[in-house]
Amino acid sequence: MFARTFADHVVAAQPAAIMATAAAVAAVPAAIVRRSADTITVSEQNVFKGAVTSAIADGIYSTLVRIHANMSHDMHTMPGMPAGTLRFLPWHRLYLINFEQAMRAFEPTFFVPYWRWMDQNSIPGWMSNFTPTGVTDANGTAIPVRRKPGTSPDPASRTLPSSQTVQTTIMQATDYRTFTLAVEGAQPYGAHNLVHMWFNGTMSQVPRAPADPMFWMHHAEIDRLWWIWQQSHPGQAPNLTGADAVLDPWPETVSDVLLVDAASHPYSYDRAQL
Ligand SMILES: [Cu+2]
Image 1 (cartoon, rainbow, N blue to C red):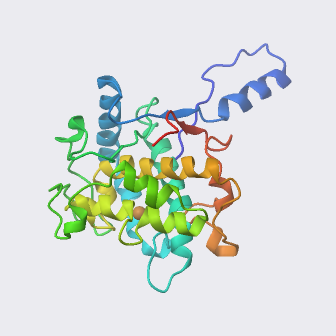
Image 2 (image 1 turned 90 degrees about the vertical axis):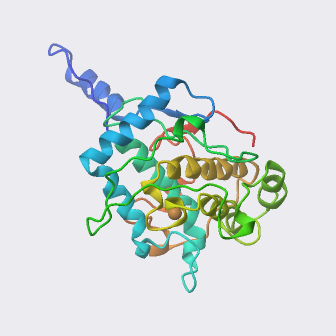
């Protein structure tokens, strides 16, 4: 599922040691810089939409959506499953990395833009008509992409979080558990849940949400908030061990994704401010 860039030609006369070094360098995934959905160029918008369209036709997109429908991965706060709270951020960080790498098989310059939903009242204009069809769940049933933004049955979810709210209720947390509860969904300020509910559509249904491509941009923003917070709280990390620390269905553990722009997962954000 991971797209790797390999040298497409090797000069036969090169000494074996040099060729081995060149191959090792080429096998490292290219660094990715995620940028704001509001500022990317038209051609970058088309790369995003083109990769998603191709991945849906391929079937890999539906495969990725179905991973999020499998609650056995324990990646959200749920009653009776305390590890889910602590797994939420690292699990979704790895989910985005896997999505991004899968899309790069179709569009080599693909990156997940982050959607700065703070202080907004609509999704990025270039995404408003992009509601692709063809995604199916594990039973083969079509998942339509529907949105009725700002019409949530829950009045508290009819307005997207303000930057001031994010600053005062999320970024000022001093320990990891408080931070992740605030950013995920602890009432009344949970930014992640609130944004999902704001869509009042596919995004509001956990097992189907990633069928809407806005999912990835929303989660890139959540991941970016975590990254910003991590820089001022370097000692704070989810306290998970054993099976709880394995980010299934992938083999990586929590400690493998604590560092943004690690050599193993080279991606970063262009903006370190809210
Ligand atoms: Cu999720």
